[in-house]
Length: 190
Image 1: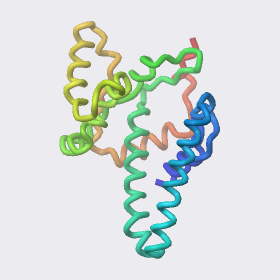
Image 2: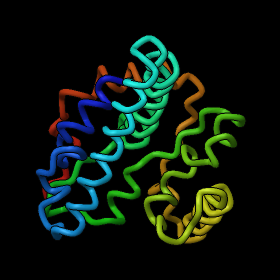
Image 3: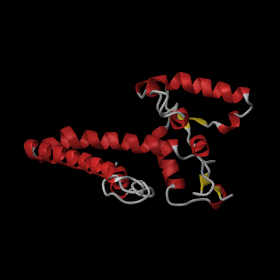
């Protein structure tokens, strides 16, 4: 959970979510940056206002502890969707939107987790390919259609789906294996 906060603040590698720097903000106009600054300011003001009104102990139990749980969940799900043992890393010169989308991973955490998340974890590839067209409550059907379409075109090898019922152990394994080190064999340079 703390790493999620670090990611939001420092934004490695894409740029800050709170501090406006890096490629996340590089080409944004002033209106977009002001909207981002307003959002950050509103969130921080709300948090400090709640802390002030509730006191440290109540704030820690009612606000901060659930935030840590949510942050861990978001970090874990996002990290696992974008990391796999056979994942490829593209340079700025070799990256395309479609290549990047097919390097993400659909992970099934079990029937109930998949349903409670509106299939965001086991429908992640479709989310990347059609994020402006497919709402979350349609991800299950869209993923099935995607797989059927890829099978019909003999391209199902592009699609990654990994059963991950042991997600709490998998995040530790992936984090340990892939966090700080990049295998040169995974980088696509041309």
